[in-house]
Amino acid sequence: MKKLILFSLIACMGALTFTGCKKGTEDPFITIKSRDGRLTHKWKLKSITGTEVDVTVFGSSTTTKTTTTSYDGTTLTESTVTVSGSMSNTSNSTTTGTFEITFDKNGKQSYTVTYTSGSTTTTKTAEGEWFWLNTNKNRDHISIEADGTILMSGVYYIERLAGKEMILHNVTKSTSSTGSNSSSDIKYTFEKD
Image (cartoon, rainbow, N blue to C red; front, top):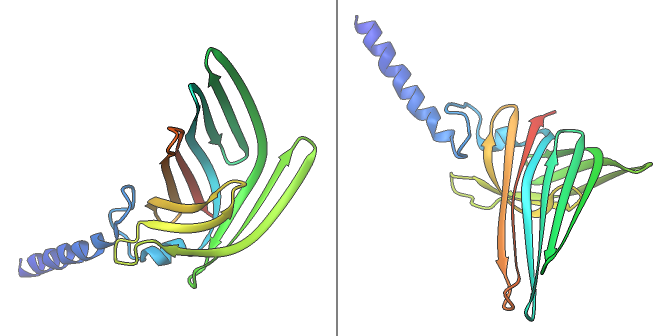
């Protein structure tokens, strides 16, 4: 009986120790690897979901452009609706391709994007730097350099960082003195390659 109580006590203490690794809202409850240890790998983009809204105010005229983006691991689809006064225009575009990004433990990153538009296939590779925005033990925001083909340079909240899956969430809002504003809310889901 004493062995059972001792074993239970040790198991509870171990579980409490490991729960300190959970930082993102969707992170695993228990993990042995640090956030650095889980991040520093090669990741392949699996999906994108999100919306961007740009409102342009020019005098008494307002134009609203809403772009909805989705990606399923192969096909990137963007649907844009532009409304200006009583006029409305919708455009859709589709591109196929892949995106991979590698984070190393020294703060370097490299990525490769290959996409086809029409009959032209393009491959881009680039290198940059990444760093945790908050260097304390929370480490839930990361700064990434990118060219805007798939990811924009900027700050991303790491919503999930598990052994085989990472979800980056980018939310931005800005307003100008003229009343023009823009906002975006986009999630990028990656799987370990």
